Length: 263
Length: 263
DNA sequence: GAACGGCACATGTATGGACAAGTTCCCGAA
DNA sequence: TTCGGGAACTTGTCCATACATGTGCCGTTC
Image 1 (cartoon, rainbow over the protein chains, first blue to last red):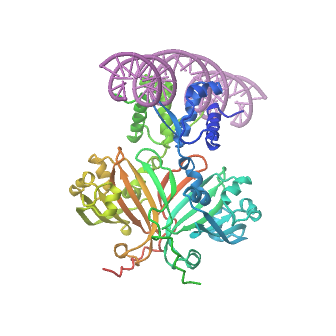
Image 2: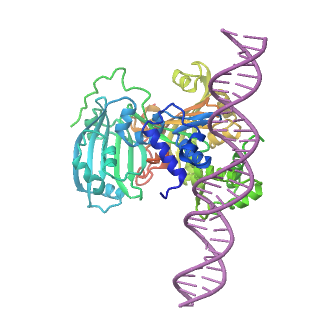
Image 3: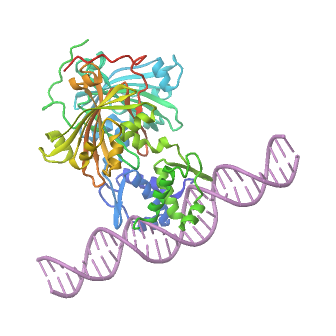
């Protein structure tokens, strides 16, 4: 093994938390026990625990053993990356209707974002995503062929493409998200069942591989009554980010959406 | 002093960077030198440097001395918290017109967010903020009296309230931001010079003191052609957040805004 | 003059020990 | 029964040391 000991310990600890061996809410074994178990000194053990603490996976305090945090905290990255996992985390049933999946030539905007030449083939996906059956988001994704071709062997109406792509070895590593607002166009309005021109919360996302090459460019448009973005920050230090459920429900009861008056 | 040594070192190092004693781009003194200077062992020194590295203030590598990073990296928090500092960081002239500053009874929404009883007095501020003279954002802020009273001794049309409040000792420490989209109401439309109903990017923010008590509740509405939010994240680890300039300018030339057709 | 090798020096990693400070829990005293 | 004190345990902090590993520089050699 070439990995430093404290990184091995960090990965092992994270694995134990993800598998539930260290259940959330329960205290982690003491440093002394971990030292004995792995035959290491306190240094690497503490370094590994500090890394997990920096990721908000465990909490600690003097005299108090570290405690595994609620899963929602440690899953914030996955729930932020994947609509399906986010929906499940807030106790809603995620749904998706694939309007279109196609392989076509990249337009100028997509080509620019994916760093390919205009005219190169890309895999484009247009899906309507819903929460408990109510239309919530329109997703326009464009993949480079390397990442998008596996999607033709996948029922894109059945579940999380994020999880699927990871499972077939696509190297989704990091992403850049740009968040703004946009008026619903005719397609958005029709799919979401809202009037044309309604304000939508837009997240444009470029997902990169470990090497930093773009794999996906997406334009996701949320009904702002259903999904917001939340950010915490402090004066010193950096800020995590999470997508959260809107604080104000769209209507007193989940009435039928106003049937759109458009094409 | 009761602060642990490594925290004292961290603060001292940060101070030296902020004052320019350790200029950006230049390498930091070696660990051995710092140990000698402060009479400490490598442990606390490394702990302090690791903290700064976690804040992206310095970079490091094996064999290479740590280097002070460009200031923009360490200022991302300030530029995110303060419209004025953000505008300056992108080379635009920030402007603000104070439409109203008042002390009045808290309404139900404000009272709930600030954790005060409805009817308690709060200081409310309504400002139009601009970039290079062009209206960009409508800011509705509500302060608890402790934090808002100093504002009556401040020309709120002259500069950064964030900087001013910090300078008079108001303990602005952390914030929670909720980002969504909303249609411009009559006031928004009139101030921003856009049609009523236009989509706006809204950031609702609650700023907390060190003890976690709310000090400010704000509702900021941006023209999405002028300001977006950007987030980077990776599969493992947390994501910082920054407010960035929109990639697509609003119009070929900054034409005069369509004078709003409302009260 | 250019390429190679080696030597300081830097940080990364790991060990072992020691003390301080906080928490928990049990047991004894009131 | 209740309250208090203290012991045991845990994490936080700090020190001294040692070795591994990568960087940069300088001198030698071809």
